Structures are given as C-alpha cells and as structure tokens.
Amino acid sequence: MDSPLIRPFAGLRPRRSDAAAVAAPPYDVLSSDEARQAAIGKPLSFLHVSKAEIDLPRAVDHYAPEVYAKSAENFQRMIQLGVLQRDQRPSYYAYRMIMDEHVQTGLVAAASVAAYESNRIRKHEYTRPDKEDDRVRQIEALNAQTGPVLLAHMDDEQAEALLAQATAGLPDTDVLTDAGVRHLLWCIDDDRTIAQLSQVFNRMPTLYIADGHHRSAAAARVAAARRPPATTAATTGGSAEFFLSVIFPARQMRILDYNRVVRDLNGYSEAEFLAAVARCCSVQPCTEPCRPDRPTVCGMYLNGRWYRLEFPAAWLSSADPAHSLDVSLLAENILGPVLGIGDLRRDTRIDFVGGGRGLAELERRVDSAEMAVAFAMCPTPMAALMRVADAGQVMPPKSTWFDPKLADGLVSHVLD
Picture 1 (cartoon, rainbow, N blue to C red):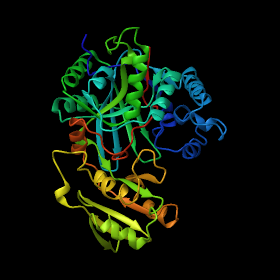
Picture 2 (picture 1 turned 45 degrees about the vertical axis):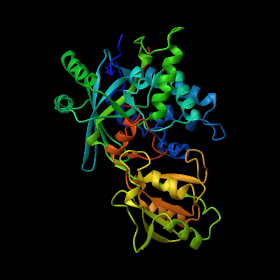
Picture 3 (picture 1 turned 120 degrees about the vertical axis):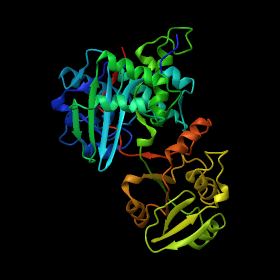
Picture 4 (picture 1 turned 90 degrees about the vertical axis):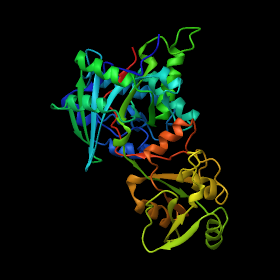
C-alpha cells in the first residue's frame, strides 16, 4: 500500500494545568550545564526526559546506558502521575508560536518514514552517526518520539485556511516560556477536519526538513529495525513508520544567522591573516559591529575590530545552490584554505553561535581570548534551503538557525 505523507496520531500531552511546567527548550539547544541550571526548581520540566543526565552525577557520560534508563524512568513517572496524558483518538494539532511581532502557525502530525526514505520529505544536511545513535537509543528507551522534526511546506492557501479555522477558538495549551515565546496548541479531533487536512497535506508533492535531521534519521532506523523479517520498505503502516513533526508554511518560518568562531589563526599573525583573507574577498574596516545586509557579505571580528568582507558576486551560481550559500563561500575560501578547517562537523577549533545570541556574543568569545576570530553570517534564506534540498545537495553544518524554537514536551508520539 502507498503510505500517506502524514497521518493523525493519539498524542501524549501534558494536562492543561501542568503544560507550563512541562514545556522545555529542545534537547539540542542547551548544554548539559545550561539544562541543569534551567531545571532547578522545575521537577516537571521535560528536560528531565530529554536531557536526563541532569539527574545523574556530572561524571556520567551523556551517552551512557544510565542516561537513557533515567530518561525512561522520568517519562513513565510523569505518565503515572497523570502529568502526561494520552488522547483517546488519533488527532492532528494546530501549533502556533508567537515571539514579539512574529507569528507562525503549523500542523503537528505523524510524518511518513516512507516519504522520508523516498526523498519526498527532503533533507539538506549530513548527519553524524553518534548523534543518530543517541536519538535511536532515546526513542527505543521511551518507546516514543518526543522531539518533533521541524518541517516546511510550500505555500498552500487551503492548508492555511483550515488551520485558521481550527485555531479560531480557545487553545488547549497556552504557554509562555522563559525565552519569551508563546506556544499555543489546539487539538483537532473531529473527523471532517481531520479528513480535510489529510487530503490537503497528502497531495503536497514535497515537505522539507528545516531542523531535525538526526531525529528523522533515527526514526527511520527504528522503523527499519522493527519491520518484520524480509520487509525492507516502510509498508507495514505501524506507528514506528511515522515520526513526530510540526509542519509550517515556508514563508512563515524565520531563519536567523548562524555565526562562526575559530580558536586560532592557524599560525598566521594578524597582518598575515588579513592579507590572506584579502586575496579572496574585499576587506573593509568598520567603526561598528558588521551585521551582513545581503548575500556574499559577512562580518569579521578580529582583535577588537570589525571588518566587512564581501565575496565576488560572480561566485554565485544558480546551477550550484549549495556552493552559492554564504556559509559555503566562507568555508571554501577562508575556513578551509586559510584557517585549515576542513571538517566543520568534527574540527574542535571551530564553534557555532546562533543568531539569537547577537553579535555581542561573538565579541565576548573573541575578547575573552577563548577564540581568535569570529564571522557574522547573513541568514540563509528559506528559498535557498529548498533549492539545495531539491537539487539533492547538502549545506555546510550549522547553516540555519530557526527562531523561535519548538518546545519539547507539549506533544509526544507513542509507538504502539
């Protein structure tokens, strides 16, 4: 049988009175130390499930079996206490995030592993085996997917109209997080609207992974492991053949800059480094922090001074969308040949700073002597992400920082 692109599911959700106490940042946004701090005085925070190492001695390895066991223990305790309760019937959920003037409204659904495997749900990043392994162990320990994959769809007036209708009443969940983001959730459990949403979304030609490549890859691995012997395709229709997702219209999604900081100048003096950079792009000193205002431009902070870097516009190529990204231009012309960083995923000399932390964080990292140089990037447009995915290419690691972030714990997908 052909697998649908999405389908409804019986979500596991916090009861209304506990939703604010449960909602937590995504597991991969906070370090373990930050999560420990954030969970102080919050026994119901979903961080006790998503980052269970915070309930164990600091010396315990974050990937140790005890961590996954503790996560499962905390998860089951919240279910037994009635903090998390499963809906009686398969449903969709409308999910709205409001941050300052920004509003985006999407659909929580179970997305098809078959569509992911056939590239109907399209990727744009490589994954790391250790990170995939971590998510596989987490799903298996809980027998549930708790971290939603952020997906995008092309403009569809009917989909947006149906969600506008579904969100006309009071939400089932209304939470304002410490990050200043308001998360609202409506359960959609009437047969007519479910059928309409299924029809509209299942006719979409493609969906795009915006954030959550490791979660979707892990879900596919769990599905493959649970298939009957000699079954190689996602055709069983079981719950493991679908993964937790939130799908937003691409035009509503907001991408911030994802900046780079590098620990040293690869043996160059400051003057030598500036000369090497000037051989591949124009370098202009700035009197204030340089926030890039268009593609091919990036800011550079070095020894207390800002510079504006601009790569030749001729290097942009519509035929090669991945290599035309600003993050690619920086990696292929400065990070690699000048600074000697060939593997952005594994080289410990480079770190990445989400745009939500601001340019002041780049200055702090360099001024403290922790890092030698910082690069402020122009945000990657959503259209560029989709062009890369459509071309079957991949973007450099840490190319996009979606903001605001989904909350963990508001809906989980239990595997039956």
